[in-house]
Image 1 (spheres, helix red, strand yellow):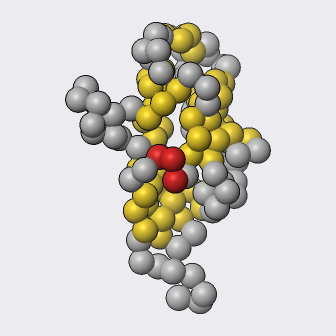
Image 2: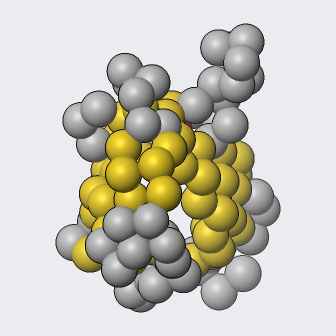
Length: 115
């Protein structure tokens, strides 16, 4: 429609659209085989579920008001707008934050954005 595809394209391999930062990897459930990150693209709209875990499975501290760089979007999947929900996007990188201090070994982000 108007030069854009409207049929959904589903990406189930995290490596197709995102590069985890050093120390992070795709979360695959307790079995290690159930990868939780995926993206559906319809036209220029992306529906993303991103779940990452620490590669060493050791917790890191998330401080209120600070944002931790968890990786970056590959070309063609970079959001056109800034985000702050509680994550921010800057120069292709996705940073996650917390409302209060806590420690965790995984992150989970659900977003809808345009590319």
